[in-house]
Length: 341
Image (cartoon, rainbow, N blue to C red):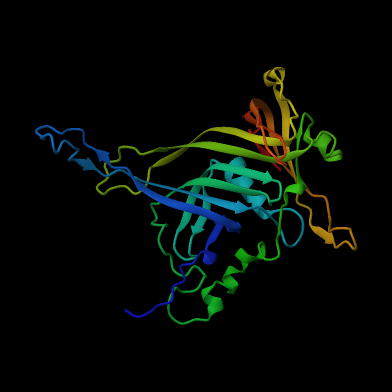
């Protein structure tokens, strides 16, 4: 067998939610068979006491994707933000089309439900995030499904066609080419004020000297397979049920500061908000003036938080001192535990 060219390389990969492409930096797909194992080992000797009978069970398909948050190249806002909000929060009980193809050709492309979503902002970096999902493997959607507009894996065709630069993929590429990342300095945290109050003056109640922060959201998903008198081994469960949603997170402050006092741990904080400015770059500055941006605020709001731990560490040399706080989110009985807008 002679030397052959392969397209199985990471930059050809594709991740999309309902057709909205996500700037994926990593991820995985797992297809698991957990057989129903027999417990009877009667008559076995000391050397071979082990299960010897089994029955097939349905398959479990799970996946994850880590990404960098992007602002639309055509202006402020983010299609990715809106799609993550729909898939993971507002429409979490509905099925969504999730595409995760490591080589742009093979992988999962089918119905799925998000089980978690997280965002993280850290000094010196762009805002990143990740989501996990459970998918429906019954349509064999984890195999190749034709070229899907990304060109054939072998055979004739220009390099541009093989890489997917054809008209059918322009919808995927439009909101990525020329898009802008969301840097850490365009984010902030506030506690205690409503969104309307913060909209009028975003700096009014911001936490000072925040080095990094993260928010983690989880949606409990349960699978159910019923007794249906099927004659072939099932590929998927019959139902997926959506349970409670939970939230936690953390933030780190420069210096030994903030509520690092025993009395502060028995106080419930209302309206914990992570702010992000998705405004587009409007003009380049001159001289010592940097690029200018329009204001277009997006946010993650948690109705209530309880700070459950705070920690600081001794440092040496010129390392700076910081304090990290971890918290648990609480709902208010009428809104989602995280509200993305």
